[in-house]
Length: 298
Image (cartoon, rainbow, N blue to C red; front, side, top):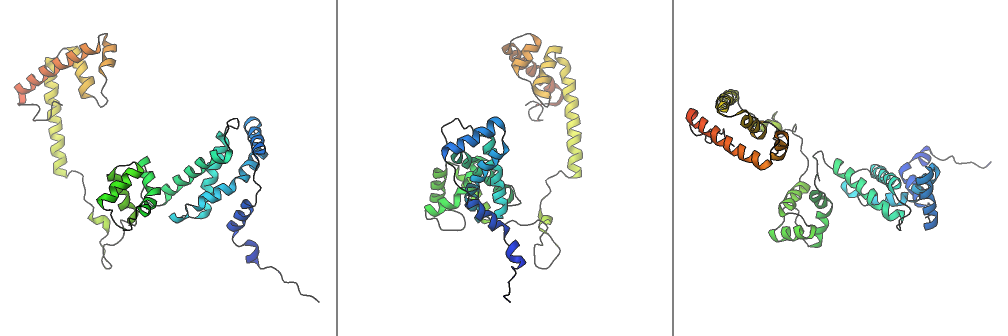
């Protein structure tokens, strides 16, 4: 009797990610006409089968682009998932009437989605919050290799300037990103020494005012408010209204906005403001000395 070898459980369930990638890479490529037909059916009729066929055919594009970002140490499955989000966004915004292939259009969305995911998850510290930082994060290593800057630490002034020119960023941004990429994350709760209970967070300076400084600041602020309130009595009602809206509020108003409310030109508002500030300064000088030294007149 011939023995039949049963496949091991590991053979049927192991590495589902690899099987998914293999199936995706075996999908047939779409001809331009077929691609256009699917895109029109999804855009005009919301045909989900057409959407599925369109995105499934270009899943290989997602996988290929995700593979380019594996060097950042993030799971391939997550990179593919984020790329798939970009692919779906591309399908939602694609205009099939334009003379461009869907793969060309989708590439930008896929890459953008994966890059955003990498920036959010590469480090516990937020990285790449500006376009310059984002460009440096993804291109600095490549540029350093291109200009033969083999050092792992800070760059020489010449290489820093050349990198800044190539990537069209400031030299200060190059220095900041170089230091950021060469340093590992460190928990503030980590001990400062192998033995001992002191943590790194214990060494952080407290920038808040001390209790004595807080009391003095509040006392001085109350005194300044009283001086200004007393000096404001020398102004007319209109002058007081303009000074309050231009100098004493959290959100100041423009000359034009005040002029519209008062029915006068913005130039007239500026003249009244200048005149009122002069009267206010004179009143404060008579009471407390030079108001500029006391920080009362901006």
